[in-house]
Length: 218
Image (cartoon, rainbow, N blue to C red; front, side):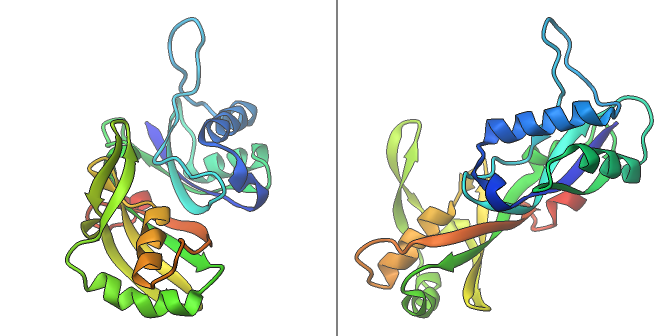
């Protein structure tokens, strides 16, 4: 069996990198005494996988990871024992037991919802949003393993709107294509006629499948 685990990373711990977050989770799972599954070989390690790296500096409110385990443990016990071993700014919010044959969260991931809070020129950006969304294409340069390549962001922006003084954006987050919040805000800043991309704060609020179902329920 394995657990689909929902967790949050907030406060100052949003500044730790992906590998450090993985190590923190592994240490907490070891301390918890939960019957998690280890790899075989000379240096056994816990076989956990995170659905998507959380960018440094960004809070994640409903992140998803997969933790294979041996033996028997209830979902509520898993949550309680993991939280007792985690630092206060990383919380386990829920867990769901699934069969080993269930696809990994990384394979199911298709999109994410971000709350974007512009730190400058918010009015101009909000006014420019409908015009940007009405465009057929949004050419942009994106860094890849082959260097800078041109991509069309428009198919990767599924929805965006203004709510409570911030932007909500549903953006592609998949192997087939990803629109990072930085690229979204750069395109919106250009649409608004700003000379440089507006600075912003960003929170990843939830992860979704390619069919826009909550990843934690997939």
